[in-house]
Figure 1 (tube, rainbow, N blue to C red):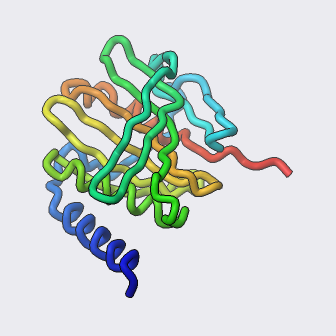
Figure 2 (figure 1 turned 30 degrees about the vertical axis):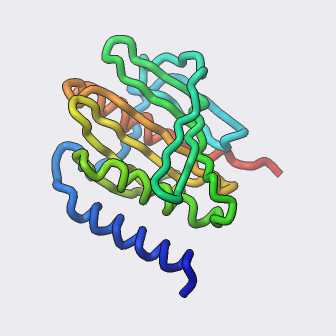
Figure 3 (figure 1 turned 45 degrees about the vertical axis):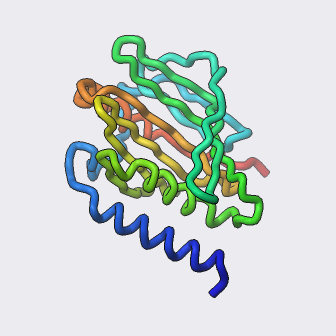
Length: 198
């Protein structure tokens, strides 16, 4: 077994141990999405990302002048480039949507999402952490949820048709969990790939 294979095995086992050691609480919700058109805004389509989606209702699109965010740990480095930012002025909740790019050019496109999930899991292991996966619109989604002080974040990650990693990051205060959760689930339920035209 070569170095890359051993590295992948160690990361995978570490991730599984962290995931199964996480406690069940309000972060672990078995229902990850709903279909409710009364709780979503207008549709956004992005052909560069290869996706379409609806933000939660009353979450307004803001200028996307966000800086890149580097996620790194030892030799694994990724850059998250937000393209869209939606903001709920009444609750200060935020949705950012963008692409995650690996700085390791030797990593295969198929393995990037697994390394990125492992990185996020390790990075947030000291927070209240929950992990789940689900399928909707023929897309396999991974949800990494964590609570840090009064902030809750749901990171929804998946591959588009080009095996680029797409990330939806819903962040909101813990006190707004009950009022925001159904709107967030409705938004997650709208995420879909844009079908390629022949």
